Amino acid sequence: MISNLRTMNLPHYRYFISDDFQDYEFYSEGSKGRIKKAVFFKKIQEYPVIYNMAFGDKDETGIVNDLVTTDNGDRDVVLATVAHTINDFCDHYGDHYIYAEGSTSSRTRLYQISISRQLHEISIDFDVYGLKYGIFHKFQKNVNYDAFLVKRK
Image 1 (tube, rainbow, N blue to C red):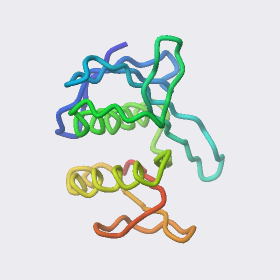
Image 2: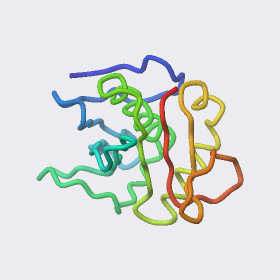
Image 3: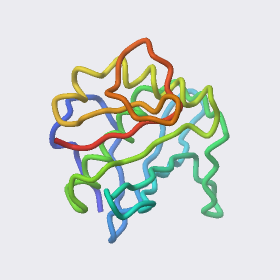
Image 4: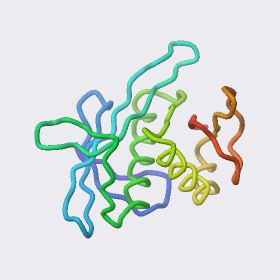
């Protein structure tokens, strides 16, 4: 199944959605060629309901690697595509919390920078929180966080 964004106005790739709306795939296109990416959602808590979002490159055997650095020159489009999958996931599963954390501290920082750049646009449809010292706070620019939580309004 192919989906298009319905709300956020960011350039993104078209993506394929599994029948259960928990797995998403798309292709990054850039200086290193065409690279398959995957986004997965898995429930990690019942009350309140929280889903973990995992993301990475998917190889020909179906294994997803969230540690590889592709550096394909399309980072913002890739991250916008991931954001769009969250929107589609919420369309199907409801407006639950989505937890995201980079596989390394530098990836978490990259996610934070991307959220900061698009915070105005993201905040139209989502509440965004950052984890600091084990507590979630309303996301603020220029604050370093360990992880993120979003919930569609």
